[in-house]
Amino acid sequence: MLTNREISRMFGLCSELLILHGQDTLLAGFLTGASYRIRRILDDLPGMDKSGLSKFFPPQITKLIEELKNTETLEELEELIS
Image 1 (cartoon, rainbow, N blue to C red):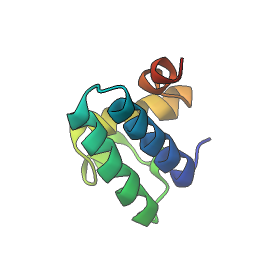
Image 2 (image 1 turned 30 degrees about the vertical axis):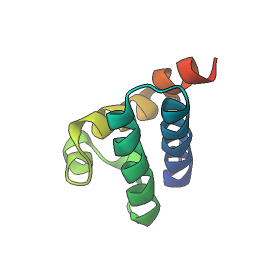
Image 3 (image 1 turned 90 degrees about the vertical axis):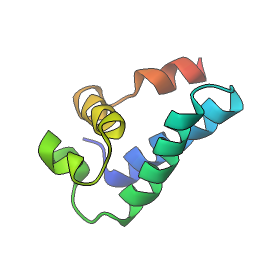
């Protein structure tokens, strides 16, 4: 199971790669903000349900956290890396 710190790192990396590749700068901004916020949250994100996550994050980020909880990876990040 992923930790908040690992999720934060994945979001930060994904954001940097999106900017580097000139793709979806809006999502990159959301990911940067989410990465910062995750580092400050004491609650265990993987243990939260969707409604709990939506209190902290917009729907785009909540969807990505749900993807991480289910697969432990982000399809977007894997595509950017390859």
